[in-house]
Amino acid sequence: MRRTVSADIAFTTVAGATQVALLIAVAQAPGLPIDDSLTVTLDGADVEVVEVGGPHHGIMHLVQLDAGTPRGGKVRIGYRAEVDGDPLEAIERAPEPSTVDLLTYLRPSRYAESDRLLPTACREFGKLHGLELINAVGSYVNRRLAYVPGSSRFTDGAVETLLHAASVCRDYAHLVVALLRGLDVPARLSAVYAPGLTPMDFHAVAEAWVEGHWHVVDATRLAPRASLLRISTGRDAADTAFLSRYGAGLIMRPQIVTATVDGHLPVEDPDAAVRLP
Image (tube, rainbow, N blue to C red; front, side, top):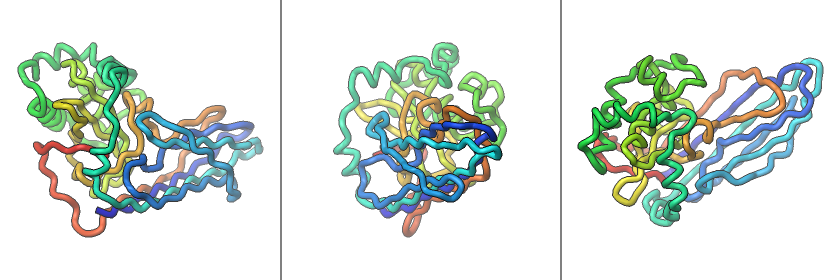
C-alpha cells in the first residue's frame, strides 16, 4: 500500500522574542520504505533542521531560530512523504517492548488519569480481558463522546473528557488509555497520519498491549486503522505533540495536513485486531 502524506504549518513568533527552539514531530516513524523531505523557513530563508531521536524509534527534529525582530518572525514548516511496503513485515521486525516500557504505560500520566478513572473502568469492564476488553473500551468511548472540533482545551485530560462528552481525537485516545491502564493493561498514545480521516488533520489513536502485541484502538472510528502511519508514540499528548516551542510564544496560522492511499481505502472492521508499524 502506497501512502502519501504532507503537513504545512505556519506561525509567527511573538514580537520581541530572541532565541526560539522548536521541537517538531511530523516525520513518519521508521519501519517502512520512505521518500520524504522536511523544510523549515524563517521569513522565507531556510534554517538548519537537526534530526534527534524520539521514543520508540520515532524521529523528531530540533530547530533553533534567531527570531529577534520587532515584528516577530514568520515561520513555515513543510513535510512531504511517500511511504510504501508491507506493514505486516514492518510490524514483525519491530522490537519487543521492554519491561520498563510496559510498566511506564501502566501508570497514570498527565492526560490519562487512570487512577481517577479506576472505579469507572472496573464497573464497566472488570470482567473482560484481551481483545474483547479493548474492543469494549473502544465502543464505550465511541458511544459516550461526540466528535466536535474545537470543543476541548489543550489542558483537558481523560476525566474532563468523560465529563464534557464532546471532544477531539486526542481526547478519545486519552480516555481509552486511562480506562485500560485502570485495568492494568499497558496503553499508550500514538500520533498518526490517517488516510480517510474527515476532517483531515493530524490524528491520535490509542494502542493497548494485549495477547503479546500492541493493538490499535481508535474510538473515533473516523478512519480505517489499516492505513494509519505512525508519527510519534508516548504516554499521552505531552509526549506526542507535532510542535513544541521553547523561548517564545507563537501565533499559529491555519495548517494543512493531507494523507491519501493509492487506490481504495481499506475496509474498517471495528472489532478486528489491527497493529500499527
